[in-house]
Length: 291
Image (tube, rainbow, N blue to C red; front, side):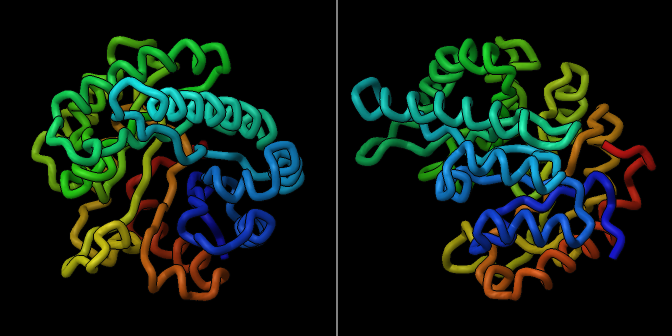
């Protein structure tokens, strides 16, 4: 199997694979890059995870995830911010351990509206406050905080940042190397302003990550698990990918799938199907230049 050199296997796609298996399967299939998640890294310990990543020869395209800092001031908010500082340190360590071209990118999911409240505006304001507090730590570590806008159906419980415009508005007070954005097709395909905002993100050098997966209906009962292989739904990946390329993004491209049926499939099959779906609908819009 030939794998496109810019394709990265986001670890969530093979969610139940331990870190060693995820690294082995990804490398043996011919991938050059992997997107890691904090929980499998923490399961073996950061130093051990860094050694295993280095031994694999893979680049790391991002670490998921930080964020969830919409709580009002108090001990829980302080704990959340401290947890994000740990995530920043983990991101720097893993990027240093990965193969050349690794990205020190920490994906941020903002968090939802605090329980028992209807304070959407306040929640969004607290995201801005958190970025202001964490940006110096990220800059010192050489890490990019990548704000990921999520589809509006997740605004109540996962991310009060729903559009790329909102994410860019939050990022713009900071240096582009310190705070950027994630362009995720699943979350942004519906937005009539998305291509204008992708161009805006490119002009300011703020596209820190590009993630691809598809949207198909009907949605499952748990809408978190609604992601499909590229090409299995309604998203125009040629249009999206051309826009991201035109905006100047040349980094790795992650396929990140949350889907019970995919998670129940043998991991080697998922790794192979991810590569073939990427080749079919994403790769044709890419330049021939490797990451």
